[in-house]
Amino acid sequence: MSLHLVPVRFQDAAAFVAMWHRHNAPPIGCKFCIGVADEDGVLRGVAIVGRPVARHFDNGQTLEVTRTATDGTANANSMLYGAAWRAARALGYTRLITYTQAAETGASLRAAGWHVIAHRPARPGWNVPSRPRKLNGTEHMPRSLWEATA
Image 1 (cartoon, rainbow, N blue to C red):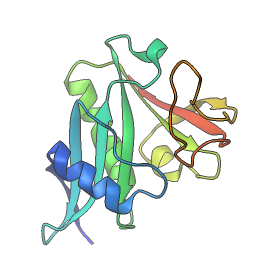
Image 2: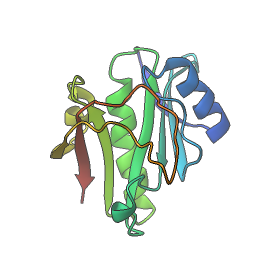
Image 3: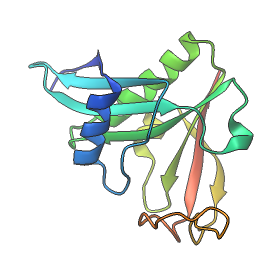
């Protein structure tokens, strides 16, 4: 199957994530979105890129791939990660990060030239008395932090 990159509005990318992502809801905003479509123009995957969720990474030079989702089409995810990094660099950013859960292999990220820079231990969640939050099903899950840099 031949794939190519396509522009995607945030609203459409969020709907795609809501339909296809295994464990997370769509994020609430973004800097930009990228799609990958087949030769018939059918959208096969999306990447949503925004400001880093962790405040200490939000330095004005770093972005985060907050979600990718595909319908299972081979190579779509690695194509999205590579395109996200090229787009971020073209916009003047010097670093792009993302996270995977411990059970995920990261094969798409490695194929796109990314590398692991840290392993994060499992957290009980983000709910605290000063800022109550709902459980989202990703609690108690170790994660890996990945980056693409110039």
